Amino acid sequence: MKINSQSSDQSRSFLRIGVVGIFIYSPEKAKDVNNVLSDFSASIRGRLGIPSVKSFPKINLIAVVFEGTTDELGSLTGKLGNLEGVEVKTLLSKKELFTESSHEN
Image 1 (cartoon, rainbow, N blue to C red):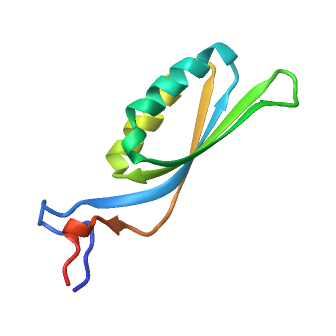
Image 2: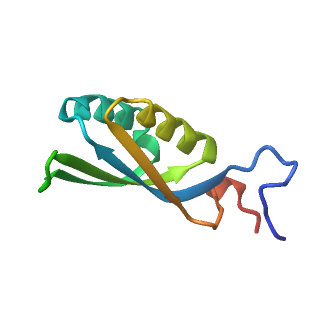
């Protein structure tokens, strides 16, 4: 049976996996970024931080591997993108994932 997001069965949980790139142009915003990320810790699978890229002005980078619903991803990127001095870019896999509880044998 093919499972897709158009199913009327609301008990299925479809997830997406992707990478969120966070550019921090204002170092004082790093604490705010970390607070937002901690709110989404259940959906974060990995994180790579690169402090102070050698440039002027200094730019801090964070790459986050995210696994969750598109609504959760939108909420995360929206909250981050609303922080002044922070820019967010996302890369999302085309494949939909599903939770083990939604998988039919």
